[in-house]
Image (cartoon, rainbow, N blue to C red; front, side, top):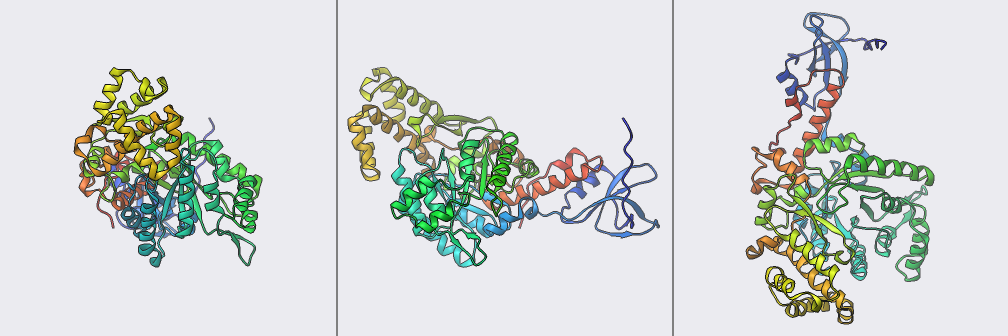
Length: 540
């Protein structure tokens, strides 16, 4: 192989400053100083490469000066992603704390993230309209006067489209400017109405959005729908129902529904268990094709989520081209989370392999799974058993006596008749159409009873119902175990010291350090393995 000639730097070609770093420990320490200019230097006596921080460049060799091979400017965590994300959403960092259903992503968590310069989403899925409205009002009162960003989750609810529509209408009415759209398998009137409402044109002819959507996706066919112009059929239907104006619909047909697409890899809760290294480049390539075809005036940003529980995971996501990162499981274990203290302690003990797939309460009849914690709970095993029974029998009455006894004793802790009575009362107030359907369809009645166990299991974990400890449903991805391994021995090991802000700042700082480490390694420096081990520490 032909030798490659060295690339000589332009003059001035010598660095003069403090003590340069050549030894492994010195190099590791220099790598961590990301807010300083790093100068790659060479010791001509033995050819070793080293690093000098700050100092000065001089034009000629002099005593104490070192030949320069390259330079790296200061690096800040704020600069890791797409600057356009922060400019658009008003954040300091390209970091999102994703929504966690049933209010686990609390208003307090969202507010703390906003004050730290991040974007957080309230976990509205599974809550009553009154709870969602109260949280939106609280966040508006607390954050809007300060001009800080925040949002609310809008989850696809195929079994309850009326509720999905009602939540979207509520968010529009209460002036919620940003939503995280999750679990969508296709576009619905609710998400299109939210995205298109309030569209206007400014004096330059540019389309301005009142509402912004961060669409969480894990499949190309779903991502394509969020990136394409909003479909005419849905827009026309919304205009016919007086839920959009004709002017809004015409503008919506010219822009993508979402300008922020979050690639959800192997995450907790709803997930397709995709590896981020395969998913993110695929969705980014799709984005590039669609933007070119549609000739959009503004870019579509693609972010990363799922499996992000360590600085290395964040650094790799940014290296792949992620515009921003989104965390979930690791925030659920923080003190601002709505999860009960007992469940948070269980999360803090989890290893990377302590997760399992189990039937989802909201999409039970569709056979959709969610990823949950396995260690310390029997929920997944019991939920899978309920789904097997549901698939095997046409009604509660057809379930064999032995199986029925186990379900009534171990899971429902009530007879089928008692369980249906309480389930019926719940749906009578939430959506009476399900009661009417269940009374004429025994299979649906069985599904609703079994779904009641799945739904309550997450509530028991939130409320800390100790007698139901083995039934806790705790959404969790492998990132939780990776985080625990990383945090072991540090101040973040104890559950009571884990705050969402400290987790975010440490993950971002660590990602910046590892990015600098990799940059220096590309110059040929003999970077020691210890440089890749960023340890958590209290950060301001």
